[in-house]
Image 1 (cartoon, one colour):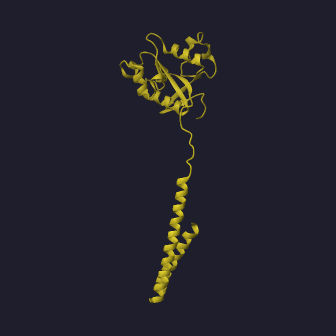
Image 2 (tube, rainbow, N blue to C red):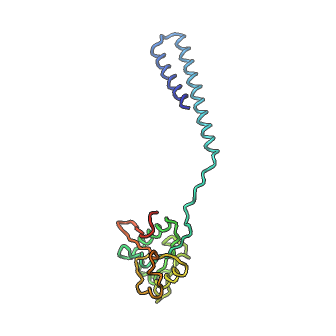
Image 3 (cartoon, rainbow, N blue to C red):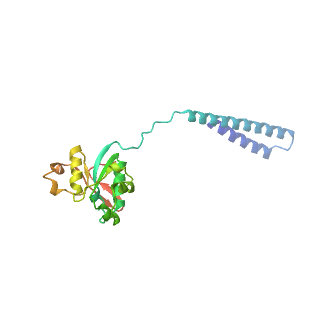
Length: 205
């Protein structure tokens, strides 16, 4: 392919030189016509080569690409705590944290106090509605029963299934009932800094 390109370039240069230097006669016309046919033939071979390359490329078996999908590693998220990481309750902060967890191949199970709707939207909301706003399946969003703190519900789930908890709450009031809270690595802390999510204890993704 490269040789054909150089050949075509050489023939073009030769045609220009002949057109400029040779006297106007039948011999000049014959030479230029011969060079033109050679250029045309070389160009045809070049195009044929590219077509064969394209044909081989189209016949190649596509490489298997691993799908970007959750690995099934579940993690409990203290939604009522995480939504305050920037100070005021924020659905954006919570959504970004959940997106980061999913990017790392985790399946977030988010727990809220029953009054979360009033803190985020100044009105009552149901778990299914909040799940839609967070782009999560309804089964991954749980509201604690009225007058029951979400801390209790999420700690019961995390300790029963051996799951870690994303929160900045230290659960001091629950250490006696849930000793696992004091274990190193059980809690995944984080922060919201200049519009970015930082999760501590997960390492680099």
